[in-house]
Image 1 (cartoon, helix red, strand yellow):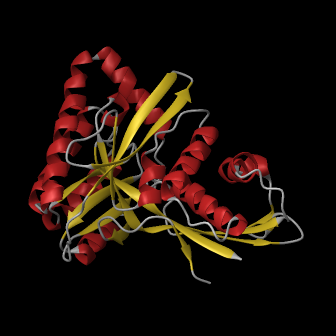
Image 2 (cartoon, one colour):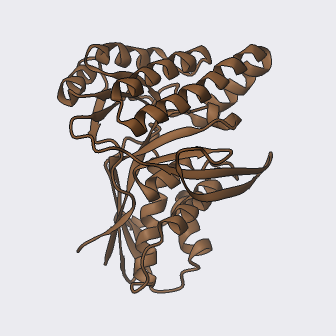
Length: 324
C-alpha cells in the first residue's frame, strides 16, 4: 500500500493575462488530494469498478505514462479541495496518483518533483484535448510559490521549461520558483461561491472581448505589471504591498468581465479584515482569496455571506509520499 499527497493551488496574480504571455504567480495551499493505491485482485476506484473512460487523468498515468502491467489496483481518493473551484483539484489528483504509482513501482527511487510536474501536465493536457497550462501541476508538485511565464522572470529561480503541442500550435512556458519569507502571522482564506468555474468558457470570453474591444489589452498588460509589483512585494515580505497588488489585479479582472456577483459579494464581505482580496482562477464562479492577519474572522464573514471558507498558510509543501 502506498499513499501520496499533492496540494491544491491559489493564484495570487496573473490569471487570464498568463494566456497572453504575462507572468502568473501561484502558491500551494495546505489542502489537497490524497491517493492510496494497493495491489488487489480487481481494479477499483472508491470501492467501485474502475472505468478508465470516466477517469482520464488516472488512466493516462497508469497506461500511457507508466505503462503499468502489474496486478490490478485498488485506488482510493480523498480530497480536501472544492471541486471545479479553480484550486487545481484535477492537477493535485494527477500529481498524487503519479507519485503513488512511482513509489509502488520504483520504491527505491526518490520522487523527482520536476518529473512529477511533467507527468501531471501530460495528464491534464490529455484530459483537456491538448490544452493545459503547467501552472496548476507545477505549483502542486513543487510547492511554495511558483511563477509561470512565457519567459524567465528576473529575481526568481528557474526550475524547468515546458512545451506543449496544442490545437492552436506549440506553446512554451518557463517555470520559476520565488522565495517566500517566513510569515507567521499571514494567512490566505479562500471563499468558494458554490458555483463551478468554467475555465474554457471564461478564457474564450476574454478572447472575444479583446477582439471586440482591443483596448482591453491595456488591462492584460496592466495585470502583468501588477503581477511583477506584487511578486516584488511578496519577496520582500511587504504584505501590505501584496494586498494592494491583489486589489489592483481584481479591478482589472473585473474590467475584462470575469468576476460575478457571487465573487463580488464575498470580496465585499471580507474587505474590512483583509490586506487584499480578489478572485482567484478563471472566475465566473469558483473562489475568491483574502490575504489576512485575521483568518478566523475572514472565514466567518465568508460563511455569513453564503460562501464556504478554506484557511491556509501561504505556500505549503509540494507533493510527497505519506508514511504508512
